Image (tube, rainbow, N blue to C red; front, side, top):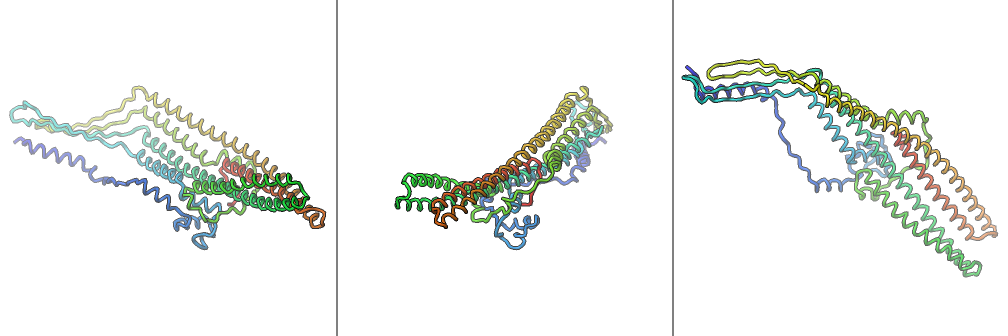
Length: 462
């Protein structure tokens, strides 16, 4: 008795279910929607504050005594601010997300090709007497990779993930460098403001003293006019100094990944700002600059990934094996088949091999450019820092001379041989030397920061 059409269809369904059973046993991942609301993200950013309790533990982890003693903290050091920046700055979040993506790609690379199940039913229009008109065939296609392709693909993905992880370290250095630079700008702005305020007080006293001398007929009015004009110019500098403090504070907040309002009313300081640290040996600096920087290490991983990609393309010269076992119910007859196929790279994969070779050479050139650039940056930063230290020493000597002049003028004034205005004029000159000290220290700090950036090496304890 020949099977009926419904019976054949039922058998086909049962065979299909049996063939797909391994796939059904593996759990499928359900889609989870995750909306991105610009209004919500903007509101979350605006709520960021330094007194957020979530920041306390990261600060304790890096050894902040202030965070351990009390919360919120009364004052914030450079290291504290850098720690907050590593928690909040969006560049760190992006680098971490890229690293997660690169790590997930390892699983994809290490996964064997999925088999393909082909089902091609046919129906005969004029079958013979008593013969089923149905032809039902099932044929899976199972790919067996050869020549270590899967290994090379996975190796490439692992090196790319390593490069992405090192990019987190590189972005972290850039963030803490930006915070250091911004806090230095804020310190300089505050110190300049303090000097200009002292200058304003001295100008007011000097103009008052000269006004009295002019009224007494002891000095010409033209001399008073000169100092009044100078006081006006210094008042403009004072107003500019105040605006620079506000701008520097906003820049610091941006470097930390926080709104400017988060730093208002917060005590920020850099106690060792004027104490420039001694440098390590040039050999140590150069070793760090050309061998240990995170971006250089990432470049090495990029080269290793490019090398693995080349090995993968070379491996593709060797054919993969395709197993094609099958079952066919052919108008009442059951037929089993065992098919074997090969992928034939008739062009020997020459094009992709040449492209991968060029990509590897490109990765090597990029690494060498980065390494040579780091060495050059270090040499320039070293020369600039040494020159700035020498300049700072000269300015400090000038200030010492000016302060001695103030002492001499004060002694003469007390002895009745000098005037109060002469003392104030000497103080004004000394104040200008103080301003030169602030500027020279700022320049030395900038060169020191560039030196640390060129070597990716912290030279001082914040």
